[in-house]
Image 1: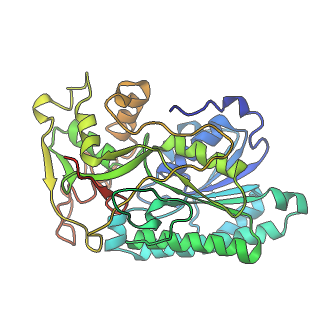
Image 2 (image 1 turned 90 degrees about the vertical axis):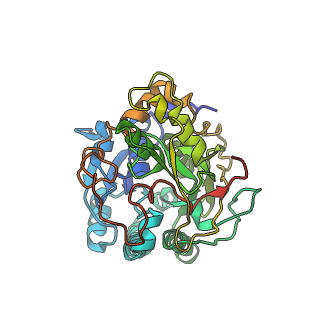
Image 3 (image 1 turned 45 degrees about the vertical axis):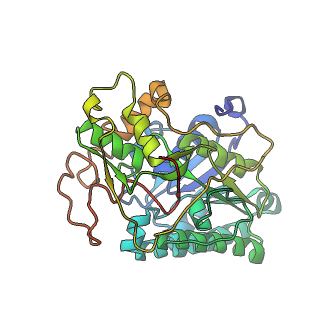
Length: 395
């Protein structure tokens, strides 16, 4: 189902309000910023540390935009955050700042603990200070939306779906750090009354995706006429959520969500990794980089991540917010035939702002990476995430 047209609400949604978005130069964060600038009347303050996975060029309309400000700030820096709250006096905060790669969390969990847990704590403290200083009307209107992942729920069997009442059971340092941050947000609501909301989403895809992720990674390999690396046997299943639909859903939760509630957001579209790669290979009219003799030439690397040998997952779904469903089918060959598919190919492939960076895995400049500490092949160990996947019994 296509996303509803919210353009008619542009004049009234967040009109005159300042929304502070942390992590707004990342993949999901930049989609949120683009949506706020294009489809609402909010003034957006983009707060980002600018790590390896961030790029301000993911928000092309931000240049000279009258409702946009960028601040390069680490959310662990309490003094810098306090200055931003005092300077901009936001009516809402959307927290998307996070370290979010499972493999990186296994090999180096320190940054995940620091950003996802300590950073969230620091942000909550400064938001609480700001909120307490507001008058009664502005206190009632203030919201802090914390954006999290369905990986905090761990694994399920072959049936069912995660719900807002599913118990937490994280299986990696990444998901454990996000679970901890979720608990902190809930505690600040219950203990101090800070008006918070939490969302947990499934696997996102779309424009400006970082090249180490599955879809852009396959596109870049195809452009270089390399074999397409698929993790394991390719039968891990993900629920795919289009990132721009996710951005719309987040603003709906911010606008209409009930304080203290958690909302799960999913795309209702399960695909095996192998099926997604096959859809990319079956693109009509694109033999320029996916040559016929390369189609189906998967290099399957069997094995599991350390500590994640039996992880499964299922989709999560957006709870009703008195609005039409904000979801569309997951990636298929038909998706890539549309204008939006062309943008996906351009922005997630050679046209991505990341693809020209020399430090970016998968770029033309990154041909000789150092051996991975775990001994995994550098070309495939980042291709898919089993921390949020279940195994299909279908070939």
